[in-house]
Length: 243
Image 1 (cartoon, rainbow, N blue to C red):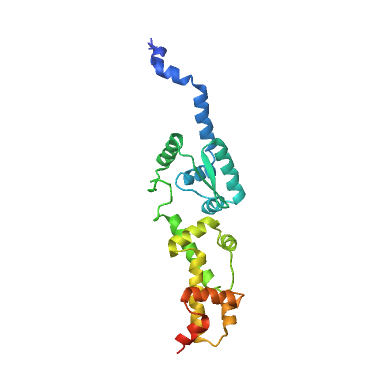
Image 2: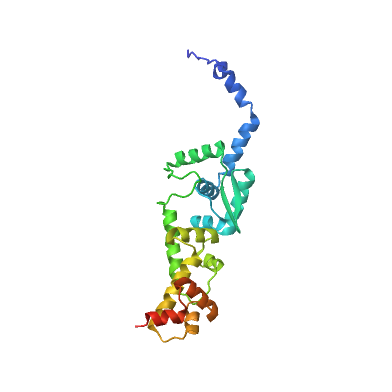
């Protein structure tokens, strides 16, 4: 005859702590809702990215090869859940993960499950300077620089650059200054003045034509900027440096 051994069911919950905790239905539902929210892989990627960086819709869409409307949809859901927050910098809206223990735990869980080695970020969660992301941004800025210097006769706006190179305006200006040491306007003005000086000395162009070649419709405005830059008027500079 087979002897059946009955286990004591009550031993499984002999600790009051377990009984008390499992009765907290709302807490379990909250956790279930969070996991359900992050069950979408695209949304999970966005959440993970924002654990490390403050980004705008354009940058996120580019990083994940998604459309701007699709990214905006996911951001709206994440923001309404309280997992992320947004803030405005000039005309740009940026998103980042809300700083709390819950998000830190989720961040850690995601990376442990995926065996991701989280890069080192500073206290503001800025992207590490050695990351592939920043390298990509720097390469873009170099292309922006080349584009501007090859078109000195044109007045190209930040908005036009933003659309052409798929970068939000604030990021574009910030990374440009980091790479070249001053603002886009100041840096390109230097190139304009250097080209103007070269044309004054090595060409037969009249001043008004040189002004147009370096992006100034008004000769008088060009002359004011030139003198402020070189401490000499265009004609004084030409006479002084003409071979």
